[in-house]
Amino acid sequence: MIGTSEPSKVSLLKRAKAALDEMTAEEDAAITAAARTDPDAQPNLVAKRGRPRSEHAKVAILLRLDPDIVESFKKSGSGWQTRMNAALRKAADLD
Image 1 (cartoon, rainbow, N blue to C red):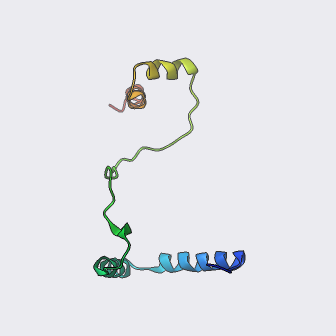
Image 2: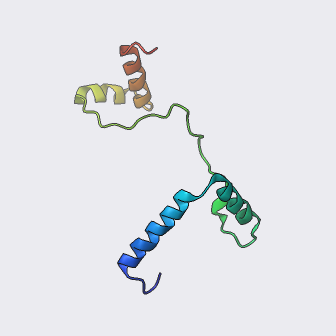
């Protein structure tokens, strides 16, 4: 966007987001299929790597704990957050 002013960039971005929100699953599938068959397509359509998303994803929160509690779990080594989660589940009678 060489020579494009900041307000027109914002307007263009809003229009692009609106168009994306209006796109149906069928339109998205058709565009993706066409891009996969295009020999000039960029390699960003490769399947995502890594662990699949969990059905029961963890929730990120801000939690303030006493330093000695955190140190006690960290002292036991790698996986201390998982052990802390297990201790909280036990305390909440969820196991």
